[in-house]
Length: 166
Image (cartoon, rainbow, N blue to C red; front, side, top):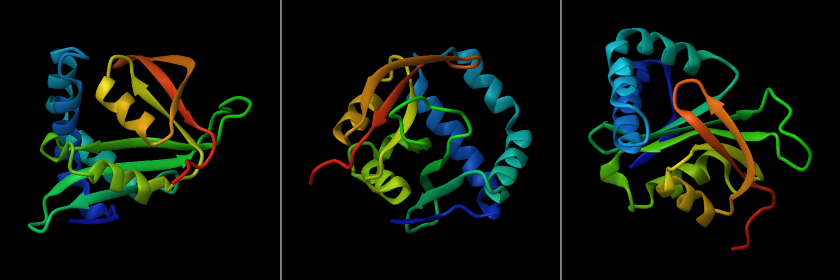
């Protein structure tokens, strides 16, 4: 297993990974129609991923197995919005691993490679208890802030204000 920076040539594999992990993580949390619609726009999503990877705004990492298959991806950036008082400006924008990698430590390794133990914040889909529990184990806490995403619905903010103790 290797965690490395995403490169433009990952665009197609990253698109397929992104579609797969959404199906796995969000089944029962968002509508099947939304998941199917995302798949119907696969070709356009490939171009979007290439632009994201080539752009300066976010850093993305991928986890690749020994056969070259992508098993996860993550991203972070400095937020473009004012997160509010006492909220870090570093945002974890994505952290997904394939269901086959749940419980293997890959999520932990990707989180560590992406933001280390830095103070940060993220948005998690309401009802995604697996993710909420994972982030709580890594020092993030729900802070009561919410927002409604037009595609997935209600999201909850989680914040890690201080470096967790070892």
